[in-house]
Length: 202
Image (cartoon, rainbow, N blue to C red; front, side, top):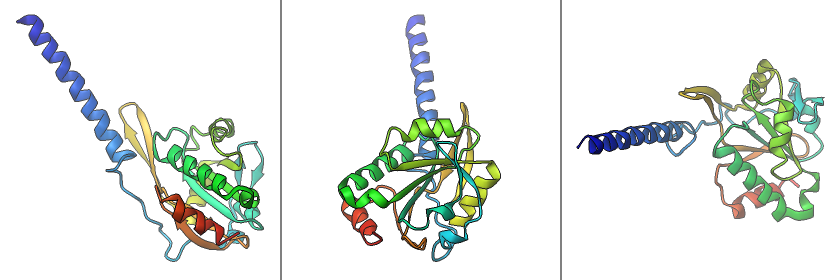
C-alpha cells in the first residue's frame, strides 16, 4: 500500500511538472502565446531613415540603412527560441531555395530581441544552421529597442521558473531594393504564398 501511494505521488508530481512546463510553453511560444501585431500603421519607414547601429554575426558594425540597394527580409527573434524562430528561419531557408538564383541579391536579417544572451558569436553559431544568406544581428539593449521600435516590432521578456523567454513579433518584414516596406509574411504562411511575395520585389 505504501509503495502504491509513493508511486501515485511520484506520478502526480511528474504530471504537475509536465502540466506546468506545457502551460509555460503554451503562453510564451506555443499556440496560446499572444501574437503581437505591428505597432506602426501602414508599416515601417524606409530603411534609409534607420539611424541605429547593430553588430552582425561577424562582428561588423552596421545600420539597417546599409541594406538599401537590395531587397530585404527582416525577422526578429532569439537563439534560445524553442519553436517560432527555428521554424521561421527554416521557412526562410526553404523560400530562398525555391527562388534559386533569384535569391542571390536578397538581404536576410535576423535581429535578436535578446541581446543579453545573443552575442555575435552566439548568433554566428545559430545562423550557421540555416541558409548562408541569413545574417544575424545583435547590439546594445538600447539599440535593439530602437531597432524594434523603428520597425514596429514587439518584444517582451517573460520570466519562467528556469530563467526567462522572449515573446516577440513573429512576422517577416519585406522591403524592396529602394528600402521601402512592401509587405509582411506571417508565421507559418504557405510557401506558395510567401515566395510570390518575395518575387514581387526582386
